[in-house]
Image 1: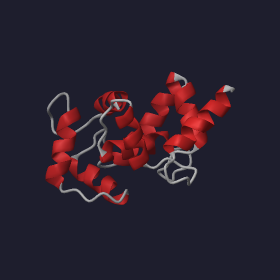
Image 2: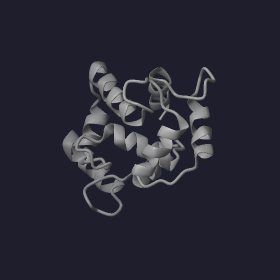
Image 3: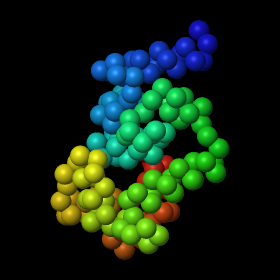
Image 4: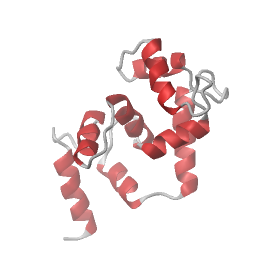
Length: 143
């Protein structure tokens, strides 16, 4: 069995509903099986970051890209694009509880500002109440 066939077999196993895409809940279950606990919000962020066509789901090609890796420049550019989606105002350089709440709402997750403050506090390394790009990069590396 060649690599491509192996990838297809793994993808089929992970794609529980057989729609040809991995949803954040499917990604969350997958990560749990390998011993990594991932909240639904974190799974949504990971899916959004790795998703190549903007539908919030991972295709087979997305999975292969992740498994085989991408060069560091492409990875950083992908992170920057994802970060911009969560910024309070374009170019401000930070994700606030309010901007996180707004983005999660767009993804179908209803959260209060207080809940978003708690999510941000997990990755707010300098304690200023917001997540900057370096903290976001660290957060995504932990996912």
